Each structure stands twice: as C-alpha cells, then as structure tokens.
Image (cartoon, rainbow, N blue to C red; front, side, top):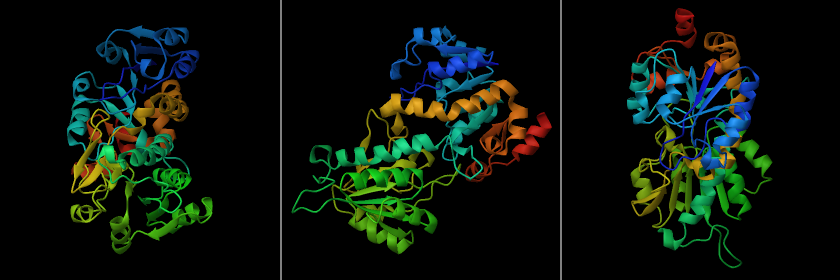
Length: 374
C-alpha cells in the first residue's frame, strides 16, 4: 500500500502522522511511504531521517495526497486540503466531526473513507488512540491553567499550591476519565485543593483509591456542579461522549458568577466544549476573557509539546496503520469491530451513530456500508 504523510498545517501544529521509526516499520512490511518535505521538522525529525527509514520525500501536499492510498495525519484536514481528498482513499486521523458540519460535508463529498482516531475502541470499551493525547492534554491543562492564573496573564494572581499560611487554589475537574484523572494527578502534585465530578461512581472510586484520599470527589448533579464551580479558581472541562458533541454542563450565568480572574481550561473544546462560554482558540492566541474569567480553549493542546505527543501517538496508532496497510480496509474493519468503531465516513455516508445524530444526517451502520462496498 502507498502511505502518505503530509505536513500538518493547522495553526501551531508541529506533530506528524508517522515518525521515521514508524515509516521504517511500514517499509519493512513492503509498503511505500511518501512524506512531505519538513513534515517532521517540528519534532526534530529531518527529511534525511525519513530517507534513512526508506521513505520518499516530496515537495508538496498535493503530491502526497495524489500518491497515497492511505493518508495518515494528526489533525483533521483543513479547508485547503479538502480538494486533495478523493474516492477510494483512506484518511486516518483525529476528526472530531460532531461539532464540524463543514468538514463532515467535505469528507462526504470527496467520497473518501475517513477513520477517526478518537472513536476507535478496545475490548474494554476504552479509546486507545485518544488516550495518549488525552493524557497529555489532561496534564497540560493544569500547567496552562496555573500559568493563566498569574496576574500578568489576566488571572487573579493565585499560586496553585499556595504557601504556608495561604490557602492553595481550588481546582475543579469536570469528568473523571483519562483527561480528568491526569489533570487531577497533576493538580494534586502541585499542592492544589482538587475536586473531581463525574457521573460514574466507579471512576470516582478509582480516582479516590489512586490518589489515596488526597482529592474530593462528587457526583455530577447540577447542584454539585454549581456549588463547586462557584468556588473554583481553576475549572477544567474534561467531559467526553465518544464521537458526540460534548454536553454543556456550565452555563454562561454560572461562569459570570465565578470570581473575576478565575480560569477555565476546556479540554472538551475539540468536541464543541462543555462550557457555554467556550470557543475554539489556537496556540497563537490561546486565551480570551469572558464574563471576567480567563478561558483557554486551544483545540490542539498536545501540539504545544509536539515531540512527546507525536511519539506517544505513534506508539498507539502504528499497529492500526500496519493492519490497514497489510490487510486492506474492508478485511481489517470487517474482522475487527473495535477498529470498525473508528469508521466515521464511508463513500459519502456517515457511519458513526453519534456523529450522524449530532449533525442531523442519515446514519448507515458500518457493517452494512462495508458489506455494500466489499
């Protein structure tokens, strides 16, 4: 199979779909890997490193897309890339389609097959290709939140861990999944007072046991959310409904009632955000003030630590890329229901139920779509 790796063009996105080590594995399996020049520069991987791995270097994204049967990216295709996609081409990347009807339409119109990292599952119902970036984003959320609390950044001038005689900041984490648990660990490590809210008692119990009663947990009722958000110095949105738009758990009125200079980090922004005042931002202009509260809503947070993120992502995605390349699309997805859960768009049809529901589009079961085209 011919695998193409374009350079990422989203604002301040430095990760790359395949590292040289991953390219070498694919070449060893007998596949052809084509990489756009300087695609790996942002993580310190030169064109010469890709050549040494057996990959070919081309000068433009158009050449990559024109050559590739399978395009492996990190972020969703940008508007300038829509025209490169074609029928019978596989796109494997983060898509986050539920809040993005424009992208969904472009993918459908192209006739390509679009597989989303964030909806691939495993035997335990986890999201193995989302998990590594969720770990990074969860840990980063506390790091950037602490920075935003500084007075020069528009924050209230609060030190997350406090000092003797001065109380630490209160960090409220909405969601106890991978993002939330990693954010909690970081906040506890920095000495903050941490409250985690979730609707899964099993998750809350796990966090309580993991962190040895150093955090407060609360069931995510409206009353509990309101009570803790009003007291928060740093509010972290870490809610996820796989494939679907994030539920809005915090209203504009509630944000407006928080102390001025408090901080919101909405990690759920890729799926539309779980806070009413959230809107997407970039690393070039990451924050804004709404209702007197600093908001950090960067849609590709892990891109700020691109090298760590790219290698972590490749560790997770490489086995799936190899399966597609070695066995072909229909066979691979037909035999693996967990990988099949990643199929979002196939030959112009929406094949993920949550995406179809949130975009008000017709849904075709992936099994039926593959059978029709197989």
